[in-house]
Length: 273
Image 1 (cartoon, one colour):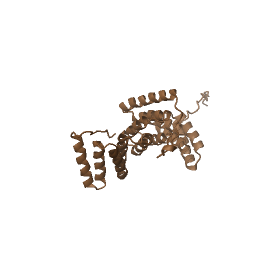
Image 2 (cartoon, one colour):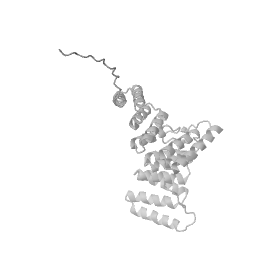
Image 3 (tube, helix red, strand yellow):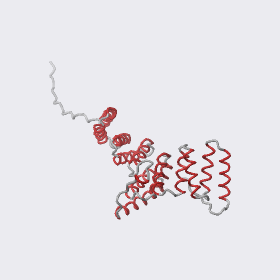
Image 4 (cartoon, one colour):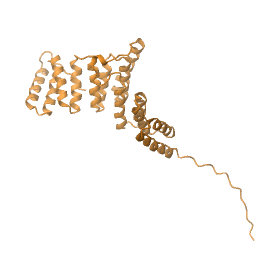
């Protein structure tokens, strides 16, 4: 009879939890809560998923969108910025960032002059606004357009009677092909400085880029009334007229632009973007 040898059983370590799988489950459950209207519950689950998988751009994007559903725009902006840092080509995060920036503004869409309620201006706010504006310019020069948009928005919030950050933010929106957001940002600047032909021409070009040709023509008309020597506005209006089938009007504008560019007094050239 053979002898049975008993060996002691070694301690078996508990299985290591699959944090990635847990994060995926949390995200699925959070999406279901969003569909059910429980945004607070969804936010809590998205945050748990991020703790388990912090480098996932999509989860940051979804968390930001959930914050946006509650109109908590600064949290939305922060999450979209993180998502874009993790994935610089994340188009949905860029689009959501633009929406959050627009909604976080102190100025409502298409406001009347009396509806703008500026924050109390202080020396500290003005100084920080200038710093944010300079940072936005530096970021734009480095083609960090999403970051530049945030910096310009922060400057506009701190100094809401200053149109320059709104104009510069619109320019970086154009670089990101966010034409409607650019239109809105130019519009907010025009509310602060309504008789500026340069900004009217720029908004007209943004409207043209968004295929809103009749509205673009209205802005070019206004720019030309304020500055009849602006060759760029004639050229832009000619392009818009051509798009709506007014070839005679387009050719007349092209001729006028050419005449101004070849030396007529008062001719101006304005950058389109």
